[in-house]
Image (cartoon, rainbow over the protein chains, first blue to last red):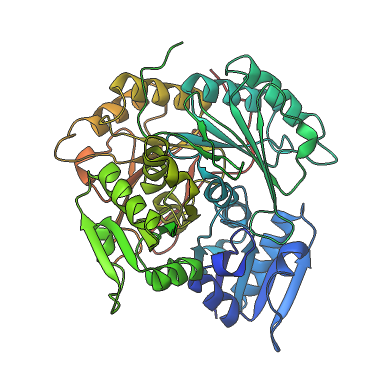
Length: 254
Length: 254
């Protein structure tokens, strides 16, 4: 008997930003898998098994979840934000592709969630209001040269840039290098946003400019956003500006 | 007395993909503004005023909503998907920046939603599993040269590309031109996804390859996604493959 496996996006943190579809799946599952920190966000339920593991064990976690689903269980794999954005969904399909043939018969469903960049953008105004890209700064699974090439291309395209996985203990210098690269392409006044733990009780949002943006403002829970040449601040009487990128774009200058 | 204005993301369509935060705001509002097609998705409520308008009247709609909020009303402006992605949030901040000084005192909040590309990605697997960009193909508010430059840069970066606003009666040829551009950069077998009305009753999802992708498969409700060089199909016994982009990236070749 083949069960099912659902990869569920928990959203950025706040309960009221989690979709009813995600809640229904979490409630129905016999087994929950995930990075322990994310699993801790899901209320415990009698009769439901929880399989927490470390952040880095994505493929091992995906395989264990597929084994149980293949044996007939109703398995949910949780991700923070959206599971399709630098998260568990790609790991599960990679495990399927390289795994047991019968895993392809499992009913696999992905439940989308609010990804960190949209939660962050919403708190600031509309910084992602026009063309943008999302880049993971982690060079655990790709060469740093690929990261720099993508940043250069994003700069040439004048995209707003959202940087995921900006920094960790094992990757301390990459964010500084990325900001240095961008300083060669964008004005010193370009807004840079550090959005940490958005929608959680310890949320911290800071607006800097590219000239002085300090990489040490970011930690593992931070989404870093760099404006395009059009991204603007709208000052407010309370001193906290809105940030937005206009819908209208003039001809790019090279 | 200054009221408040909330820009609300309705998500892609299905009710269970709308966040509780969005529902709470829609329920509390005295006045709802939006493109009539999107407003029709919100249940009517006694005592609540509805101000529907045409798709193209974004700035006029934003100004009217700000007027009412400034006069003390509790106003919600609705968007499909996420309001910060090619939608009403940027229009509201643009209207504020160019509008009455007292509008800057309005309590403006953005409630994020599931944007079309994530709803589409979830239905297919994990096509956005690694670095990606989102580009609006509309040249109503930007020169077509800017669009082509961004597509060229996205191709150089080997991003997965999500195309919003791919086609309309007034813009019939742009999607074909974009696909032609990409054919010069990516393999003929690159997956191209046409995801129309995702999560609604008339949802239609098609997987093509870049060599033969037919722009006429898209309409105004379609999100078009073009894979990176790494995006893959995983065949299944039922004949409907999953599509995903691996987390691991080899060195880019130019």
